[in-house]
Image 1 (cartoon, rainbow, N blue to C red):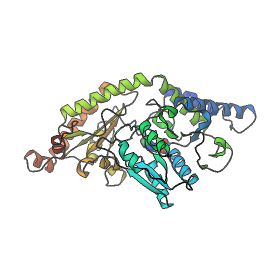
Image 2: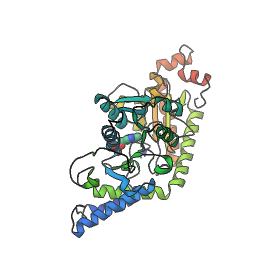
Image 3: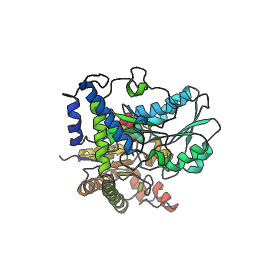
Image 4: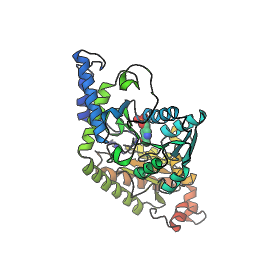
Amino acid sequence: MKQIYLDHASTTPVRPEVVGAMLPYFTEQFGNPSSIYPLGQDASDAVADARAVLAGIIGAAPREVYFTSGGTESDNWAIKGFARANASKGRHIVTSAIEHHAVLHTCEALEKEGFEVTYVPVDEHGLVRPEDFAAAMRPDTILASIMFANNEIGTIEPVAELAAIAHEHGVVFHTDAVQAFAHEPIDVKAMGIDMLSASSHKIYGPKGVGLLYIRKGVKVQNFIDGGQQERGRRGSTENVPGIVGFAKAAELAQADMGPERDRQRELRDHAIRRILDEIPSAKLNGSWESRLANNVNFSFEFIEGEGMLLQLAARGICVSSGSACTSGSLDPSHVLLAIGLPHEIAHGSLRMTLGRDTTREDVDFAIDSLKTTLANLRMMSPLYEDFQQGKVASVIEQLKADGFPYAN
Ligand code: PLP
């Protein structure tokens, strides 16, 4: 059976050119970058070249880019490292309610160390309102961390505007750009970003490698004490093949970022329109205007997300749900709750994230399968029967009556 992979926000396949660039660094070019003989120096040069490429993509200086093991480590380093190094100036941090757990759990860990954290709410589209963000600033605020784009609903935050507000209050601004790096144009200097996290496996690079940009002058504690790697701030022998692959993937993404983004955006809009036109009791989650080009996220009423995913998986379609049920918890996603979805429809949510290899046929096949799946599930649902007989009210009908535009 053909697999249709529509879960690129989760991870991406490594591009063949990336594998090709990495391979020599496992075998003949296996040297340790800290060694002074040529084999080591070649590896050291490869790491330096990769750093320059990645820095260039976000308008940073190479010295401001540090390699890590991925997005989670970068978020931990930025937030814990900054908070601990600057605790004498204040112990308050501002973040949003819809951050990835790499940020949220890091902030919770800091709360246990005596820091205070404000979790700014978002609007119905998942956007942080600048006025709420400004209102969260206090005299003892030292750091704000707001994601560039949300991994579940794809909403792109007004990062430059938020960074400017943070700076007006003398607050350093970090962004988790794991979903946006090399997908969206980013210029850290023009946007006022002081620290930025990115990850290789979201951009068709290998897993287990990421970066943290730390603007020159921003004081952050070292993350791993050890050798002199990463200018003494993050010890451990460099993951040379991973770093080389990360840079190659970023370079390739950068080369056709505009056209590929336009292509995916068109497919995304086709998918959103088809679902809104053809599937009843459906609601688009996240902003349509300020949205990652590859993200489609819907809630469907009167079904269970888990049943939907299993039936789609049986048809070869790989997508993810908006609730954490599949990972053993019954709680719906904190992101869907933060945009105001009631529990019952947050449970019936679906995320499809398109990629470089996704075709219009793939999208159409997935939506045809989704239509059949939902019809089957609803046929078996006593609640749906009650709804059709007018015995229960629909949350989505109410949303539409209240003027929400992207629902059917
Ligand atoms: N932040 C966001 C927004 C993400 O989407 C992810 C991965 O899903 C991460 C952080 C964690 O990145 P990594 O898997 O590289 O640790």
